Amino acid sequence: MDFDGEEILKVLFSLADEEYRDFQSTLVPNKSGVVGSLVPGDKGIIGVRMPRLRALAKEIAKSDYWEDFLKSGGHGLYEEDMLKGLVIGLAKCPERQRLEYVKSFVPTIDNWAVCDCFTGSLKSYKKQPELIEDYVNSCLFSDSEFTVRFAACMLMDYFINDEYIDSTLEKLSSITHDGYYVKMGVAWALSVCFVKYRDKTLELFSDCRLNPWTQNKAIQKCRESYRISLDDKELLLKYKLKS
Image (cartoon, rainbow, N blue to C red; front, top):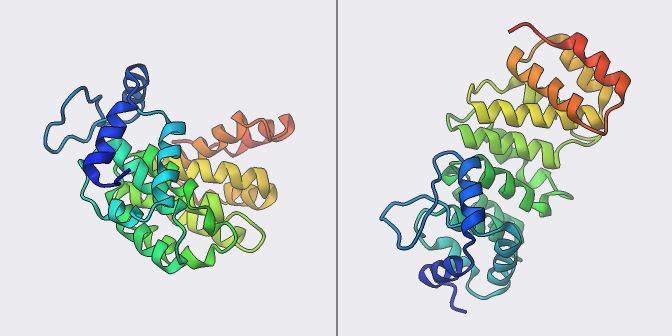
């Protein structure tokens, strides 16, 4: 297969699932379903299930044309964005080169689904988070909602460990962006921190440094987790804040 933008587009439409398209369109704001031909500037959803997107991304990443695909302008489609994020994570390349593609891709993210899938795909940073630490830090105070969510999700995915937990909690608590998807990302990350570092996270809750909405949402997510004891779920109620 030639991995130019038009060929990829044909493949994506051939994999479209109408039922999944309609379902996914209800979950991702500002992404309506695309049927038939594209309208210029369309940023909708074709309806390709993730296993098929991942398989296609692997095929592209193994080809000699993966960089051509990443550099192609595309059509602004949800699935194209997903594919590019997955290919960046899968590509066999020096980490310095990957980081440049990360930096180019993050400003284009405009929804939570692409953001979260992208951060989860950057598995090469699991063993070497220090390679992307400075860039993540630079994203924490961006004006862009999804750039800050990217940073929060990266902290959750790669910086909750013995070496980084103190700085991760400090960084999460210092995020001031008021966007809904930022606050949800921070709350999600804090619930993971509580699972792995209960006492340290509980200390943060007791300090009341988080905005009430985020702290209460983090506590809610903790209480919904099967990895947290019933006693701790009851204890966490004491740390809910008045809005």
